[in-house]
Image 1 (cartoon, chains in turn blue, brown):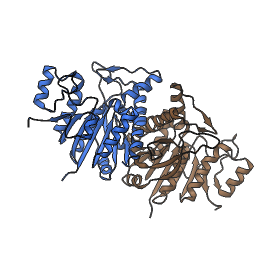
Image 2 (cartoon, each protein chain N blue to C red):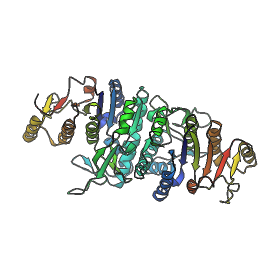
Image 3 (cartoon, chains in turn brown, cyan):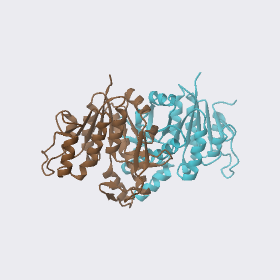
Image 4 (cartoon, rainbow over the protein chains, first blue to last red):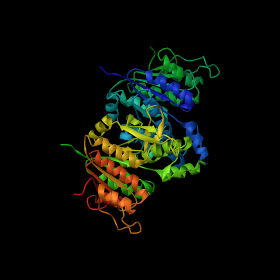
Length: 262
Length: 262
């Protein structure tokens, strides 16, 4: 029988404000069994870039990553955010290890080809190399993964944290019974963006397509949901989209994805 | 029989200029068997701090680490320098993993008590936690260690890279036959600072004390040499102080330390 593995992706201000981060890490620490934390850090990256006189350019919510910006995200995601989370998990008796996609050759990517937009040093994931991370997990270690990949030729690349979480979940589903939880600012996927309580409790592929067509699900949610459904098609047991409170009561809140009506 | 482990500490501009770093990593990659790279990054930290409008304050070559400076060194050592080295080693088929002292609870430290000088968030090493790093090494992984420690209470701390290298070497000497190589700008310990070729080929404790008293060995070298001799007293097999070229021909150049005349 496969053992359980919970992968939690957190982003937004939750990871970047000391009080909310501390609360999140308390909740994360209480998750029983194997777990991985995947974090973002975009707000800190934007703030540090601004202090260094580097302008942050976003297209459709994605960061254009020129050379200077790549240095900033490598520092901020791989260093500042990652190491502080690791130190704080250690203080909660969680034996954490910080990883980027370059460490242990964990996440190989290719620099995104230029079509309409040149995203710069952004990596599209080619594959996840699970062998060593599985050994760490089986030894009781909790990986804390920064949204950075590498191309295998010495180049670090910037990769969306939702994508990293989905790719890790999909790859690790061969060895573990994986639950993937996307934590963000809302309680779940909302039927009405104006109403915080209009959480759609269950989304399957057909209803997702329907809501996309009707415009109920807006553009900002689509990459996250696509990542979630991709994980399910790759054998991930359960995908949940929720807020930080959802981590506390993870079976009763948020939006649960499923492939088909059930 | 214990297997060999080579620990190389590199600092100064060698790790911070792309060409010299590439050459160093080529040489490092060619070292046969288990190895660890410990790096600095002070010049990059000073440059990034300056861009952010943070002044770098040094006392006797040691960085005063206030809160803002701690963020900078955490980003630069743990993120920018570390991840780029890891990615470049991966491209040379070395399965590298970047670690700070917080990862795997590798290096516990206490914030240095304030006496004459308040060094701020600087960590004096309490102990090295070897279990998991030994497993990684035995699995063929090459750790790349940033000069950062943590206090076990959630706080990252800044620790001198020579000290980190010496502490790792001393702790790992229980399980490996350790060779510790300090790479720096000079060919070795110089008898005459004006003469690059006046390398002292062998230094033992009595001659070290003698050279310290006579002033042949200047203040800047003393912490490095103390770290080297400490490692020897803890069972490290061999300590060598050399430049990057010394890595290529490591048995014939530089200054070799020994406890007694031999």
